[in-house]
Length: 182
Image (tube, rainbow, N blue to C red; front, top):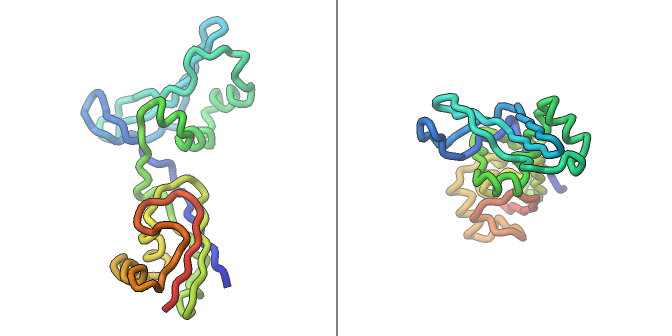
């Protein structure tokens, strides 16, 4: 029987970027946007706050864009400081590349296994689904979901009792499946 596990965000991730005031490298998203229009051109930023000193930094979303080229729904969400839009934009690789930022997902996600009835079975088939692009080591997920140590999971991989079509050694942020034979 195939079990489904879900890796879901619990809050917004921290933004990794150097603070120009104190030198810290962690910011939290405030959920607020700054929009500035100059005639037919518009600029928009996401405001982030330093976790150490509270200094504000701006992440560029729109730069000198023609107002008519921006979808009205997006403008409404920017003006309403939509928290869902904040989460979407932090996940956007174009925004992250443009602002030279990375996301820190430590303590910002949880694993929902749907109960512990799978732990007593001899063979476990699991499909892991990601609700957001959260980079996590599969070994950590399997250890947490099966209530094993990471060393035990790595030993099971080496013995061939834990198999998957994806490489379990690095970080993944996409759906995968695995089979565990005890």
